[in-house]
View 1: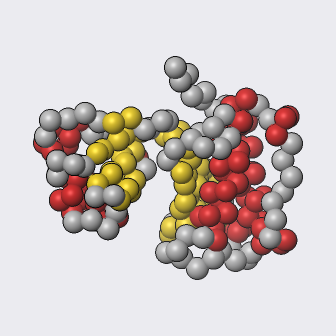
View 2: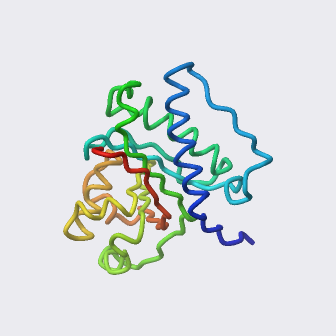
Length: 197
C-alpha cells in the first residue's frame, strides 16, 4: 500500500526553488544541468512525486510544465519541469538569460490523483472543492489538468470544467459525457518571489 507523501520542510522547499533557478542559469550558460549529489539529499526530495513548475515574469505567465504521475524523484522532476517550463512550453518563446533574474518560480508538488466517483455531472460540480482540488479530465483519448491555483480565474465549477475540456481540445461539454473520467489531487505549492517580478 502506498504511504502518504511526506510534507516538505521550509529548507527542502528552498532547496528545490534554488535548484530550479540554478538549472535555468546552467542551461542558458552551457546547455547542461548543475551537478546534484543525490545520496546527500533528504528522503523527501528523493521520493517519486508529480510536480509542476510555473514561471511568471512581471505577473505574466512565462511557462508552466509538469507531470501528474509520480515517475522520477522529486528533485529530478523539478529539474526536468523547470527546463520544460522555461524552454519547451510551446505557448511561449524560450526564456532568455536576461529574463531569469526577474522570474518568479513556483513549484507545485502533487498528491497522487484519485478518481472522483459521481453519478451525474451535477454531483461532480458539488464534490469539487475550489482552490483545493487540482483536476484531471480524461475524455475521448485526451487528458488535461488544471492546478488548484487556476480556480481563482473562474467564478464557478462549471466554467472551470468547461475550460478544462477546451484545454484538452475537446468540446466544453466533454466532461459531462458518460465516458469522461475526472480525478482530483491536491498540491503543496511554494514560490521564490523576485523583487519587482
